[in-house]
Length: 504
Ligand code: G6P
Image (cartoon, rainbow, N blue to C red; front, side, top):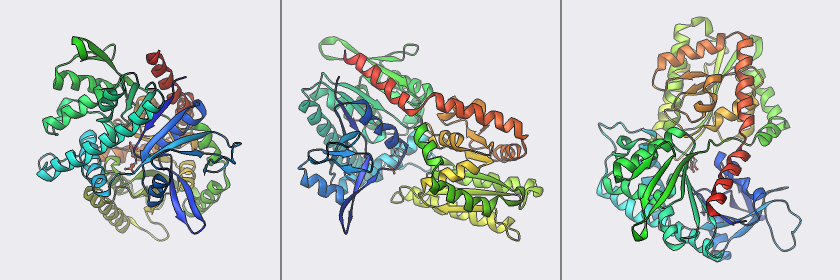
């Protein structure tokens, strides 16, 4: 079986320094959960990621750039010689990036520029402004960091005799595929893009050299993977439009010139990611969730009152401000709802070193304060905003939601929608943006919302709150069934099977 070398910016676990020594904390996010499954599927897998804490850096120094074996059960721990009984484990190689370079790579290019281009978040009349500083950050930060990680990945492939499956993740590493191919021509390389891929016009926001570099970098892979067919098609259209390559939309392929006048076929495929159904259900049945659920019930659900819920990172792509404006409008247009429904938002501050994200967080605070001031009444406040990272709280909120709001401007997949329909216990109705990857699977079991139409979102909230119970139950059962039938394990297994087939 071919070994697997995986690369993502965030790793499966980070080290923390405590008075009693180094401890491990699991990395945040759905991607980590999804990829952890690798440990159970493979004999030889190594995960390359950025060292993200001072303690990670210490581990890098101690291991002289080699990997650390980490086991996931019963608790996260480093496997040493005395510990051969632990369950599934993974080798993790932390790569230390020089801080200034990391800032250019992550805070100047990946998050404000690439993320904004791919989610269509720029107000083009005034932004982006691609200055000399941005060009410098691209070359000294993005390109340099991609080269550093490509070299780390290629080292690991070479250590395994030059034949391995390489799985690169996300928008941080678009230039890695091509460079790894140059050093390791026998590797099978895939790149998974977890965020939307716009068509050629969307990419024209970037200077020609950057957008062509990115495309060429990805075309160094054998497979470029997305969550939706729409993104895969857009990718092929970009290759045709920007690089004049021959594409086959039906087969999902593009022909790329290779040595000796030949061509190489690169496939663009869709593999919709999902959640780990078993672990969501296990957490949902836990005492920590029960305690939070009881507290929320007491606070918000006595006397037949209802609850609208959202759980998100405070990312402009999540459209949190418009969601609150829609709620405000709904209360204004349906005064009978005053005091009868609360909007509970559990939000995790995200990427606060990027000015656009800090501004967005301030806007969220502003709209919540306005709405609460406008409508509050004795013993009731319209929006209950919690700034926190608390998965057990999120699951308790999912269980109690009458309405779950996912109104993203656009989103590669959106796993909140999938987790919520699995956990919900009140025949909750999902309000789902038509621009999420999740909409392809769950749209028919949800109320579709248009991310920019605040009036329509307000109407959808009212419709969901007043929908007959039986109809709500039917939608929820069908949505949960859909998620169960495409568990994250299947997402990973299908990709590995396809890549192995290419390897053979
Ligand atoms: C999205 C991206 C991931 C990223 C995560 C959290 O889901 O697709 O690659 O890790 O957001 O963002 P952060 O910048 O905190 O890693």
